[in-house]
Image (cartoon, rainbow, N blue to C red; front, side, top):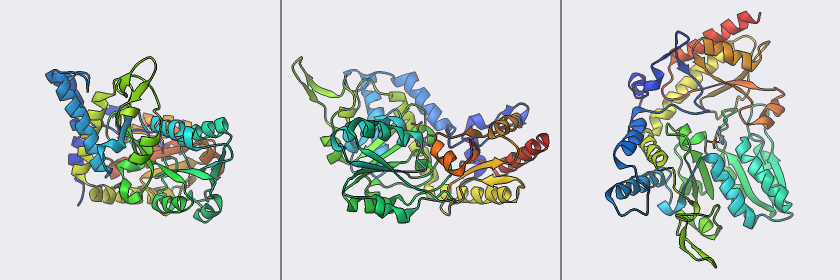
Length: 406
Ligand code: PMP
């Protein structure tokens, strides 16, 4: 299976534009991906024909909205091979999903003296909620170290895990380094000491086929906007038994079965965790994005992204003064780097003028920057619609930046 780059690009109307008179090269896909026409159409059609509140209406529009919303949940369950739709909780995104688990599951299961183990390459959203929880209950946050290539030091895992470890939080694919982590192995080893595992799939889900049952992870979280879907919607996939035992995260409409002033009975899964009117159009757009990825298929996605990464990496390695941050053996389509003599933010600004959109900063992974002793990196992150010509445009623009800064 191969990707026909021209037809894939034609699916994304936003790509066909000029920025400062130059063709846009959108290389900021780790921040958010662009949206194909089918996702835009799904959202437009919903608001054009079906818009109504879900679950409570007795009229045709509400029934159609509910069917579309719940249909999206089923698509997500199938895509990630969740056991049932009861294991699929819509959230605002990865961040909210992690906060939900830290608050609801963590609030009950993590106590004084317990430990939560995360890794040195986590996004802030998989650090801060655990730090807040640990501070609150008097637990200890431990950090699995990384090496100079930006890989987890797996040899340290067993000595860091113990009967005190209640949860391991690990990113499947690092947004700051591109590293793909051996999550299956981590889950197995964590389970051996009785710890639960949360996998942060924000970056991974658009690039790697994920089977939550095969992985046997307890919690899997991701965001639609990194998977060609809309912003403001994501998902928590969790084992039903865990969700059943967890208290609700927020109270309000839709998450209840019966309310009196004395007592409230909570709704069934997954609604117990979906208080208030949900992001209906977002879920529908998410479902359309899942269809889009499934149609292309992960074999083709993987082959294409590997090709692009190899092409970009070979140019980066040959580029004088460029230091790659993150050179893991198992790596996804991300090039994080610093260029001698040019601050990443200046680089980002100069590249923008050349039509090349990259990200410059700490990528919400300050501990990674601290490890590599850099204040920030420039990051080019590629997707299925990026071309070799766009990679060339990146390096031509980098050359220009180098010349400007002498
Ligand atoms: N984890 C990782 C690895 C990410 O890349 C991101 C987004 N940059 C997040 C978590 C947070 O995702 P969101 O902002 O969509 O909640």
